[in-house]
Length: 260
Image 1 (cartoon, rainbow, N blue to C red):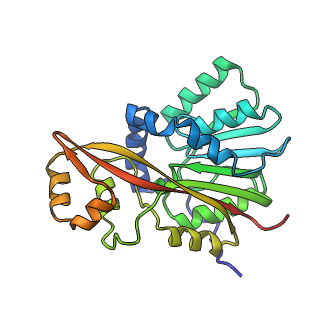
Image 2 (image 1 turned 45 degrees about the horizontal axis):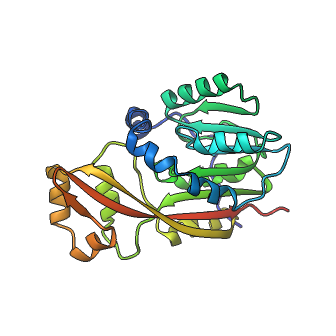
Image 3 (image 1 turned 180 degrees about the horizontal axis):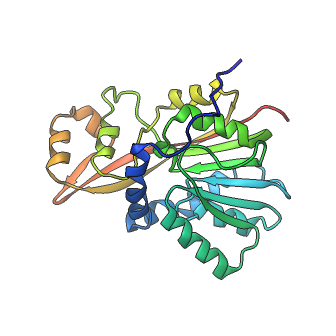
């Protein structure tokens, strides 16, 4: 028996989500985002984790600029793909590109960041790439993933993780110094336990990493000054003039809903 969530709750965005929507819309099209999220090798590795079945529907949750969604639709013209995000400006841009390219098996949709606007058993698979740390009420979201997936469906989660040694959640505090909708980088055990609680079985996984910069202002300087050297070394924190670089490790994991 796993936990259930009340589906009659209020699904309107809470105050935190409302505040992060503008930040997400402004952040997603940036050069930093494009450099990280357009990594074709990473996209290839994620898609190769699963078997894409013809005449099935697939969801790209937190689609951003649609890298997974466009790739799936292009590679597998016999499937239907939906890209979903709270960043309505990005969704509008994605839809304009889709129309220009006349891709008929792809659609984009914005939502409130909480309830997935789809019927039960709508999808054979869900990809969530560099988005899970933005999701609010993670237990409800995983329950929603379970609801919209057909029996035997899968979720592929690709997201940076918090190192177990990071007892004071340095990486979360680092992320939240920039308004980009960050909620939490999960530890591997946290993510595994969360999906297991809702009946998912853990499948394949692999690790990757990327490095990104932040403006090295007083807030970052104070945080780094008060953080142990071992944690800074773990994340390869490297101040360089007016910027500070940090490296995160990404956990890429397949979770499967029982049923087939």
